[in-house]
Length: 474
Image 1: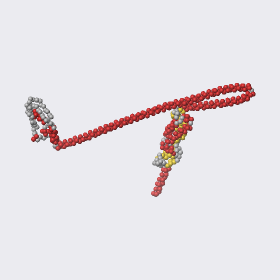
Image 2: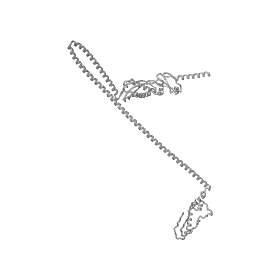
Image 3: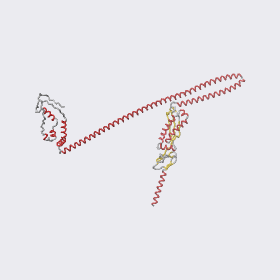
Image 4: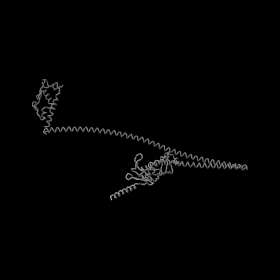
């Protein structure tokens, strides 16, 4: 039983696989090109192929890795009404035409169509081909004279087919048919050529008729002459009449030939006048074309100068902006450096003041929290330096001689010399006051009375009359 189930499952899988294979085997109609894209193999040079094109056959399309679409081979009829196309003679002409194109079945061209036209609608393909035809048709007309375009249509159509088909193959199309209807121009050059040809044909026909009439008249006259000569042999009177008739016939023929010559002269003059007018119009058109070309050259040169000037101006502006940006960045860098320096100095000052505050806080704590005791400790620590400063203040003073003129003692019982020395010493901070500010007492051997004044040696005063005090210092 299990074996039977297994066989049924295998048969079902095989049947499903066969159905899948059959469903993925796609056929291509004769009026279409089947394009298989995805993983479709490689080219001869080893590069990956973009698509595989099949016309009139069938192929297997792998699921998941491949897909397929169709390109329609229906011919497209494109009306190209080209106007104001410039010929080699600088004369603008109108060339209404109709082109019939379609997707090519050549392998290389089909590959181009698969790469460039797949997914486009027929209208979009028609517009794309129309743009290409317009450009190539203008190019062909610019390389040919109006006479060649108007008279040698085979050469014109061959040049158009060669140029247009070469460009259409690049996008996968081929040229089926070209039909150019009527060519015209705004200046009337083609019409003048037609009139000239018609006048020439009429004049040639008139000339041929006149020559034939002349030959007939001459033959007839010769026959009459022979007849009349033979008759004249028989009858002299008839000869005289015939001679008179011949004179009249000759005069008539001369008048007729004169009229024919005048007609030929008028026809020739008209032909030359038409040709001169055609040349005049052609020269006028060439003159206008030269004026337009000169204006274009002038505009081109002016545009080149203006563009160069604008480029130089923009270059200078960019250089100025770059220099300004460089100056701004340099100034910003210097400002950042100054800011960093000041921040570093502020940080150092803050750290120093913080350490100093911590030291003062520890001194106050060492003094038991008493600020006055802490101040006395600081003064006691700096006392030696204060005394040194006080001694240094008078150490380097050099006094060679002091002369004091005074009449005796002053109101306080001191001599003038004693008053001078006492005043000099009092100009310095007293040592006992310094110790008193620090909350300490001066040692007893140095003196402890704050009101006690040091008496200096009194120099003897001269018993002369009273004079102003004068001091000399060397």
